[in-house]
Length: 183
Image: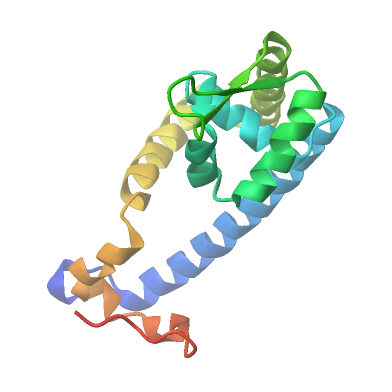
């Protein structure tokens, strides 16, 4: 261990660079797989994301919730929902008390489509991990859970970790067209 209880910086930098590349590759491969799965099920990736998000919210959600969670514009989501309605996969209802509030809910056909997407993703995961022993799967899952917990640190809290932050030049991300907010 180096100073401040940090591991050897050179070795850590090499390991993190390799990990970064691996995660980028995994992300790209996952995107390609998901796109292929959606295409086989007659969905676009954004349509599949909308359906999966709806299912995760109990099969019914406000349009505003979907916009926030999926991180797309209202106009884009409206187009996606219109196509999902035409396909019979979702329904749209206005709130009785506040007509500005619009709900989207999965239909029975939509719920079945979500199950098909989930099964296809599980099959893909099973194929991708076919070379893992059960012990390796346990270890891998444990490490992934630990990584997910640590990865949930919001970007704004990087200032809370000065011993790590000083190792990286975060000024590269500054946007000259938009001045930084000063506290």
